[in-house]
Image (cartoon, rainbow, N blue to C red; front, side, top):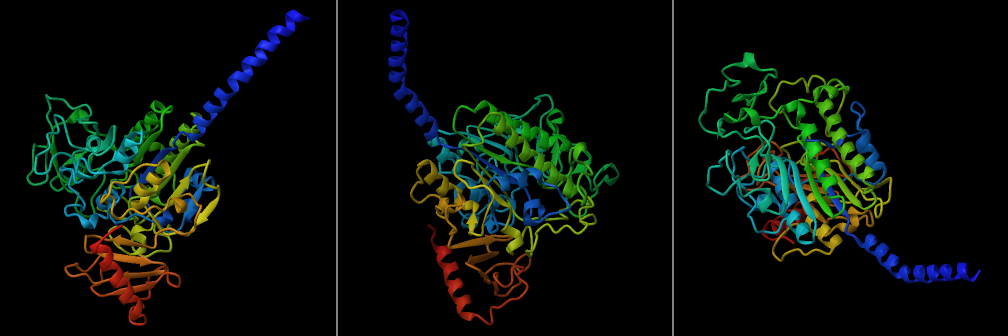
Length: 509
């Protein structure tokens, strides 16, 4: 018996000695920073998602995400159009503070100064692997320099905080219609150099204006320049035949890149910025999504976007990363139905209301322009199946995530980003005190405080698209659709919010 008990005693002593190491390893696993995945749709409206009331389109993955996490009913982007909205996400700063942050052409220079603090730069400094996949639309190359699409393209995402990128340079309806990976156009061929112009026509590629018979998608307005894949675009392009994307495959290509990044970095903290092309024009879903919805091609690309979200969720689940991954899904601005192509989106709405109960949409500073789907899931911290009416905004991601991971916000950087982490995690019903909503230009602004919303008449602001040419005041608690201007009845609120707007414009955080 002694021969048997001696080894058992030794094993027991060994196990006791290993307990502290096991405990330390478990504690290390528990304290690993959360992965962060930010999925940003393009032109997805508040009413375009099932969990926000849509019935004519099916969004099971988004609905599941909301059921497993937190759905905001008063979540905002900063602007009713893409470039300024994305600028705010990256910098923590309202875009109207900086010149040149309007909707950019496809050959624009980078509008984020390399070296300044950005959301990805803050996370990367804290040890995160960072990647941008999808639509960029923040410019590429040095200010004042012409982009060489056949050589190294820099500065770009890699110079503002991302370690890798696979991007659409601008938008799907703007040339160049190529992907850029890190600093190079994918599949660029020196024997077939790419030329891009937003002034004069280059090359001999037909245009939609001169050859409408060649189009597989007709125009409603604009978009009548170079034809690529049977669709005419904004801007002129020649060459690069092997590098041109096929619109039907864009969602597949981008989703593959996004899930591939997660696979490659599963053992490290990572930040994925996945900015899909869907549901922006031209709306050209893969054949497997054509006709799936009950409201035409616009509904079909919403369902394609939902599939992309599902692919990311499935990858996280398969790699057992779901529990410690913070997933945020939102949109860069509100919805638009006819945005330049005669794709049947208007005719086939079939009762679908893209902005839900809200007025306006893309390009406006009414609620439909910036109040967007906003879903957060993090099983380890966020209670499942919850809804919050806290006022939250994408501009606050930088300051809030810095608090979460104990990162640093550089002084005088991210001047409009407020730490609302408790609201983002559903731990508090209080979000921002106020938020400024930008419409179609830097002077087309509105300000929200509580249920009150003021659209002032700023000097130099053009009328139209969110600016009636006069002061407007709405009580969203009583009038969420902004139908009744009550500025005459409440001059004291007009005065208070006007002064607040001036204070915000002159300062920041």
